[in-house]
Image 1 (cartoon, rainbow, N blue to C red):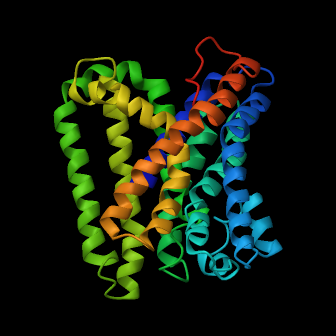
Image 2: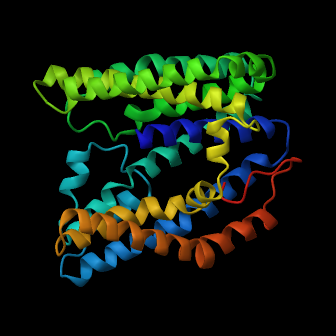
Length: 332
């Protein structure tokens, strides 16, 4: 659920930025420089740690694995292939690699979507045609993927959640001023619909995916569960945009300094938490390892933002400003 929410939010954020840059010269270059400065330093530092750790125990990663991850292609090859190319020592390195597939999806989303928005000058007809095709076809790709257990981490299997966020951005850009009052009026009912959709996704998970009764069950799970989730998060995002700036509970909660701080350090937290937990669980009970890993990861991520990511982000904000009046916050 968290990954799907991340993709919907990412599609919305990136498209909202691109729509504001449509008529600005050189904006695409600045967009890619800023994205690279935000994601590459920590990503390649993590890869370096993984490769060195693996080599230090006598199991250096093969060249093809190195090339696979430095080119962000891990979400374009079936997991069964990528996992077989990884030497399984130590285990936290292998699983550390495993969580990076969503960054691969993100990178190629930037590569494909940003030029399309720029070169079409954000004309709605071609953009909406592309998004509608993605939303309609992706569930079928997930359903017919040859290995129903291994296709959930592929770019083509997750791109509909990104497309949903892109669609929300376009709709909000064009019609948000008309919809805001009505969405605010029915916010509670709409949040109830979001909760119902999430409950439906959980039911599908238990009825098909978790129980793994048959290959057909898994195919149904792949085709429907992620679709229900992006519908839920897209509706949640629309309603939350409408009530933002008000005294409603959801926007007040999202404005809380603790959540804003967690959002700021979340990129590093996403990369380091699971490997740290895997390293600790070899020596500690599960619950203790999980709690201690969270504490260590939060501290490590805070230090990373203060001394590594933060300085880079602030320099990026100063040296590569978007040519528009309203700048995104530093973490973007």
